[in-house]
Amino acid sequence: MSELPPIFLLFDLTALLTSRTRDWQEFSRVGRCFVPQGVYEEIQALGRVGADRQQEQSAREFMRFFGDSDWQLTGVGATHSSLQPVAGQVYSRRARLSLTIAECAYGLARNSPGRLIVLISNDQPLLQRLQGLTVANLCGVPMAALLTWIRSGRRPVVVAQHLQAMRSATVSVSMVPQAKQATTDMRATRTAKPPTRHATTRSEKLRPVRPVYNHPSAMYQVVSGLSALVAAVLAIGIVWYVVQPRSLNEFLRDRNLPTLPEISAASQN
Image (cartoon, rainbow, N blue to C red; front, top):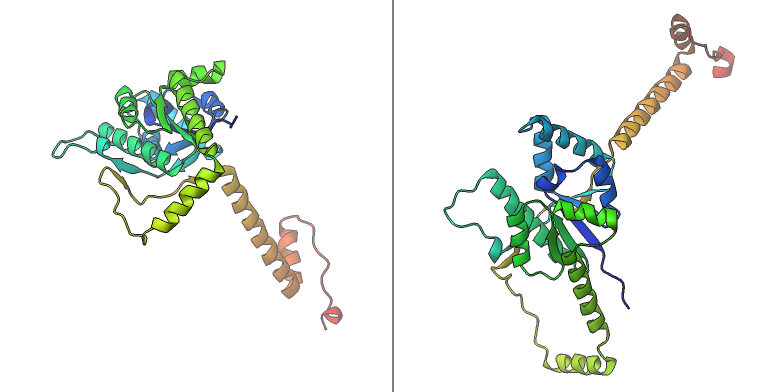
């Protein structure tokens, strides 16, 4: 029997602001964790000036956690006919962010075949919109369901159903008889036509976006900066000692530091 597909967890703003560091650290146990670029930028803004003090503290806590975690940002996205905004309708900032998250989840699912994308969100309308897309490797659950999953080890029903369906589909494809497959390939070869470019359907259109990338560690940046500074100081000291050792020793004596043996004129010649 084939193994269950890997799981990618994608978090929206409502989920992250209602959890804490101890929760975020546990989420990687069930899957690889991603944050949409739009959500990350919103958290950055809330960390500077939050709508209320609680949100501001939660945003700052997440930014500190994210810098040293293995979580990743993703700017992937794709449009779908069910996700298209109504022409002429004015959307609030929250509604626009919800649409961006839905497109990110749909795009990540399209770009990650063989992996189950699970959106973690407390926005019920958003979860219902994803369910309406009927994508085999995409589903969503609220934060409470994820926390129960972590603590009990039991997957939410919708996650278990999608995993089993994906595994069954994989097994069915792998059990196609080789002879039948070879016959199909031969027929396809005889009837094949020159390849043509097909336009992307209006209902499913990928947009060029930034790829997934790792967020650099803050500690790594600090250590790299200090290493470069130490290397520069040593280089300057060596050049000073070779060119003017007496001047360097005077500088060290003034600061009560050990002096270095001066190079004699004979050794220099």
